[in-house]
Figure 1 (cartoon, rainbow, N blue to C red):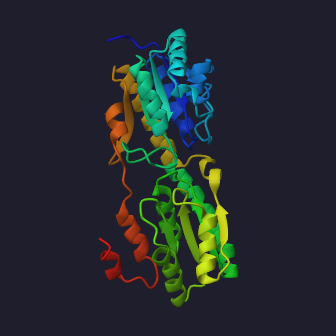
Figure 2: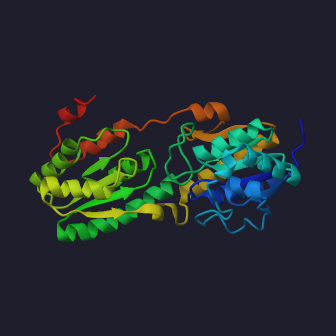
Figure 3: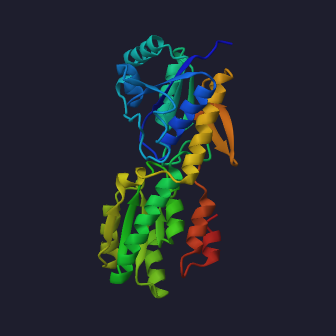
Length: 334
């Protein structure tokens, strides 16, 4: 087995709270094995442009609690081309990198797969607030993003209750509803709209509001996953159907910021440790994931073929919490 002397680490795609904790874990674990670490700045584009910095214990000493990523991140159209990937391989050879730890989501891992096919060993660490990576139960950043959204919605609810209004809140999640559904349950939303469930506006929104109003509620919270469509459009339809004037809030990139919470710091640290441990033991071209609380390694090609489905039992729980909803109606949808 070839001795591992130097590895690279990068963060790519959308930033997520906990990425810095993962970088720190990669660096400190590598150093404990006697392996040098080079930080690749700005993701795959940085590998093409030879944008790098040497990392040591001191340089990652105060990043555990910081949001964002000290290595910066970017999406690279150049890396999608053969010429761009060839330049990236040249950088790896020039720097003497024996492997790359890539921290990000599905797009990051597809890039890592292409690099592995060109002879550069890779290990992926899943980090995205969307929690939509199929091969892992959990992705770094999800819990912090949920808590950020919950805090914002709780504050919105204070003023919404004071004015007896309807609020429509759009949360992130790309084409997945994990973030929206989790948040909606946690804030006691009147309704939640997710891409995984075909929208029946009359049933899923109008009737939810009507039943709540008949039960004595005078304020309403509608949580919309960005993959469903615009919260502004949902607000307009509510006005047309019910005659009320909703207040629309798009939380946007605020959900990606802030200091990572305990779960994301701990998970990122474990994943970073296991990523380097795999490299040191000669196991490459895999993705580190979680399953039932433990850490698993999956071959990258197999991992990218896996799909994650929204837990619709949580949607039923969400429905059961709504005033005026009959359990037989919920169960009849099975």
